[in-house]
Amino acid sequence: MSNTLNLAQVPAPDFGVIKTYDEIYQECLDTFYEKLKEQGVTVTLTNSDPAIISIQNASYREYIRRQDIQRAGEQNLIAYANQTNLYNLGAFYGLTPEAGEDDETFRQRVLAAPALLSVAGPIDAYEALTIQAAPLDVQSAYVPTMPPEGQEGTVTVTALKKLTSTVSDADLKNTILTALSKEKVRPNNDQVVVNVVSKETALNYSIKGTIFIPSGPSASTILEPAYAASKLFARNNYRLGGEVTPSAVSGAIYAYIAKQSDSEQSPIIDIELEEPANKIIPTATQAAYCADDQINLTVKNV
Image 1 (cartoon, rainbow, N blue to C red):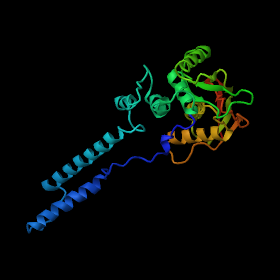
Image 2 (cartoon, helix red, strand yellow; image 1 turned 180 degrees about the horizontal axis):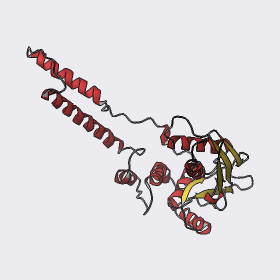
Image 3 (cartoon, rainbow, N blue to C red; image 1 turned 30 degrees about the horizontal axis):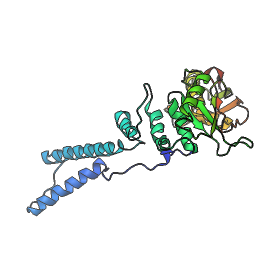
């Protein structure tokens, strides 16, 4: 949706209970010695002393308790809640998860839920209702702020179909149109046009290139994660208006393989991409997609 909050930009919550084990242990130890001093006792105990072991045990239990409190608090927040806790947050808006719907998809629906309180008319409402019409099939939706000249009164809704969807574009289009009916949802004078963008109708591209590595490592140890990185990049960048650049593809492969490598130094010397040769810039009503069988990578030792 156009104005859905990006949860990654929201600061992590702090319920005032998080402390390290060392901080808790030192506080308990200081309190213990202070109480002894009040009784006129001055003593320094070793780590093997039963009293110190008891303080360590109590400190650890306190540390775990504080972690549990923090996690319990987070489960009341949309950004962190999962499973039944997330379902209960959705219940505030009358939402329940569809069979097979994962937490992240449902989380985005909950975030968009306030827009459902309005009938379709506002852009956010149209987009939210489009996703709500088929949450297992619609990844995102887009409605322009202004209709094209000469098409005043026409609302064009673009729905991006999920890669995992098994329904036809035509059936999904009809489902969305039904959900945006003028009888109960949209203003009577709005004429709605629905366009479905799928992997078949997206701007298709290929990922083809050569990865150069130093002599020694086996090419197979690089090739498999390189393919995995390319597939992940293609899926993550399958979105309305999502740009694809050669440098972004190379960067994704570099980062993925570096993360998989045990060495602090990247095992890749260079990546030369033949495709995509240029930047792919979809409009807000288009998406770019690279199918798995359009990935062709080779590895060479230099």
